[in-house]
Length: 143
Image (tube, rainbow, N blue to C red):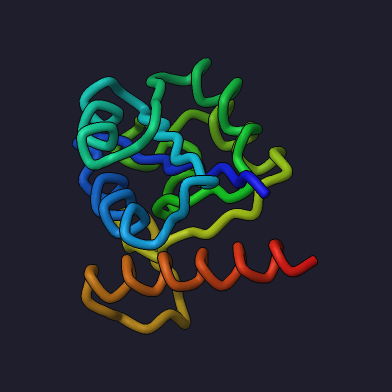
């Protein structure tokens, strides 16, 4: 059964690119990776990392995020004005309203703190996100 994974990132696209590189190691030919960047630089970097296709900007995100069975990105993608102001309220609304399961990486930013989360190396957080997606996709396939 075909699954679509949407990876959202902004700024330089480094988090999204790392997620996509790891996802390419575990996905099958039935899984499509869509890169949605808040800007063209982020999208381009995620496509170079191996996304099947991508789009940039607020409207592209509002339209395309609903295609995802799973949505991955830093927690800032659901907080307006985060990622140095690149995440708009309209983007957050579209992300939270879509049917896809959201898998958010608990990355701290200057203007908020995630209380009760363990401080882990970034590479470990990426690995955990990919493993969680793999488990969720396997569970969905078994239904």
